Length: 79
Image (cartoon, rainbow, N blue to C red; front, side):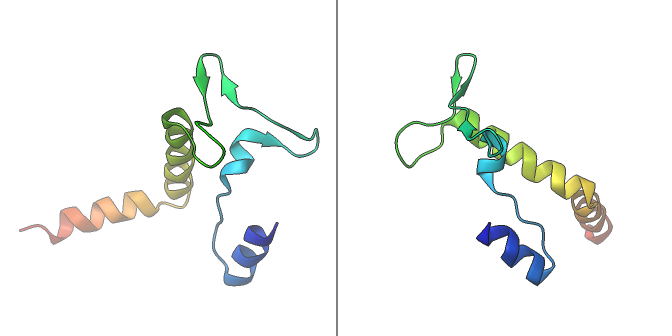
């Protein structure tokens, strides 16, 4: 909740990894999807979880056209 409050006050988008794995309304968090586990120990996400988090970040950037803009800017600045 603190992350989302700070994001709102700064007009930025926050991506909380817990939102990808937890359903607060039901009070549960998923530790796996099939054979892919999201947690390796008490404080570390697994490779499968990291891939989900990165995908969510990429989706957010694409939604805001940030990745498209960055790629276009890179192409235009090349000789």
